[in-house]
Amino acid sequence: MTEPGERSSGRTGNKRPTVPAHGAITSLDVAPRDGDSREIKVNSRKVATLLESDVARLGLHLDMPMTESMAQRIAYHHECRLAWRAAIQRLEKSARSERDIREGLQKRGHEDDVVEQVISILAGSGLLDDVRLAASAAESMARRSPASAAFIEARLVRHGISSEEAEKAAVEAAGDPVDAATELAAKSLKSLGSCAPEARVRRIYGRLARRGFDADVITEAMRRINLEIPE
Image 1 (spheres, rainbow, N blue to C red):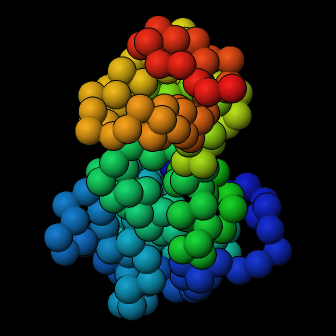
Image 2 (image 1 turned 180 degrees about the vertical axis):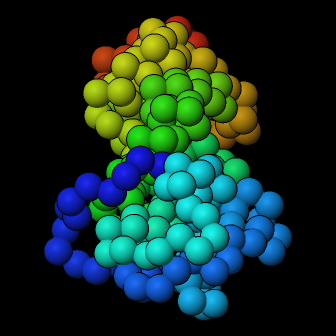
């Protein structure tokens, strides 16, 4: 974790502890159930838990005298560790967009400087990649059920992908709109074999419209499967 800069908001996050600016470090024991972290005690009182890499980066050691500057840096890295753990837990469950992780950390009460630091580290390590996420999600949606690029784009945006990246991924995944609409129409026709002809046309038209296809595309798709839309 890098060093804290100026706070980007005036609020006080509820995840950053108050570390005393006097006395000395009296313990740097390994944190229980977390072998890559250390519990920091000042004057024999636990004040923070830091990643071992941050302990080394800050040069912390037993009997080290505390200062105001060091107290702030320890508090900052304590909060960074909490935010990092929370973000990793979300990513372990499923791929997430940058916006999703950011909003999740903000809801937990983390300071903006910490949130942006964690986002930067995750992106730099490849754990957050909106371009890759958009492409994967778009392909999955198109594979499950053909849809228009506009439909897929809207779904991606709803899940936190930027409009620009969502549009690129959706266009590529959706392919030719008439081909996609025809594939969906053909699948729908098979499942509606027992319906009256007019009912089949209405239902297939509605299904295609709900998947974002425009009227001209729907008309051509219906023609390809030998269904005629009533005037």
